[in-house]
Length: 349
Ligand code: NAP
Ligand code: ZN
Ligand code: ZN
Image 1 (cartoon, rainbow, N blue to C red):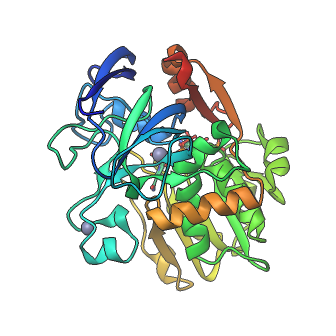
Image 2 (cartoon, helix red, strand yellow; image 1 turned 60 degrees about the vertical axis):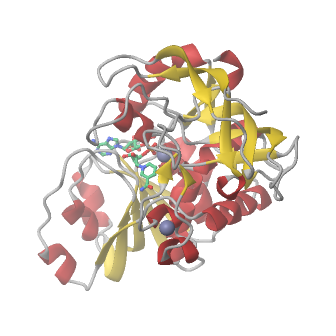
């Protein structure tokens, strides 16, 4: 293909407007590009933060979607990793400088010149990037990963963000047999965190706002489940955990959660709320505790995560929707009412 293609997509025309069907241009397939026929696109809470301008100035119209699963339908002449028919995924970024220390170390997400986000960014060609709520996408093979045969594409799509964002810190911070790990928030990220931490052999506790999803949490692999709305929870669990992973999309009282760590424990936050939080630093000093952050994962680690999930049969729990239901799905995510990831069937776009 030598020219760009027009494809259907769902876009937010402005930050205040609901998403609607539109068309966008996909660039011609370049030397190292693959053309992907998108089959499924997950809805991440980050899509909602950005489509509603919660993180600052977004680029509109915006086509969200950074949990993409599909099939390669064309490859550029220089492509070596993929061939037509391969099942592939694309996550939160589609390019980076590839030369800086972060890129060379496999942390493309922390590229010193800035990674190119899958949407709501500007590509190296100077054009805005558009995400997965669309029929096709053209991506450099270096930012495309392989979806192992053991995973269906629909349940694999959410792994491209929710999977890697939880796998990476759980590995880095030592979730393993003999470790007590708490997951705060049982949403898209949280439910994958439970599955992955359990598969890594840790003893897993869910800290959710209520006990509404307790049965699910235990089925997903949690050993214990507590409601954070119950004050007794914080008394009972004081000093319990080696690691707490917060996936909460809203500001949280981190001081209260730090009190649940053992001496030397770590609270790792991946949630990206729109407002800052206040923290009394005595909650860190006492007990030599660590408060850390983590952003998605590099490309090689994303492939490692997909292979791990295939080996352990860990797909996401999904609610498959038609593209026209996307605005309703956003409202349900905002109400913590998703079990546990909405996935758009791209055939309905
Ligand atoms: P989600 O599906 O909406 O899950 C968030 C969960 O947080 C909810 O299910 C709910 O769990 C809990 N929660 C929501 N509001 C709360 C509140 N006011 N107080 C306490 N708990 C609350 O969202 P997601 O897609 O998993 O994303 C979670 C966050 O991570 C978002 O901010 C997103 O932007 C961010 N994110 C960060 C990265 C990264 O690289 N660091 C990557 C992807 C997403 P319960 O109902 O169980 O309480
Ligand atoms: Zn995401
Ligand atoms: Zn770089």
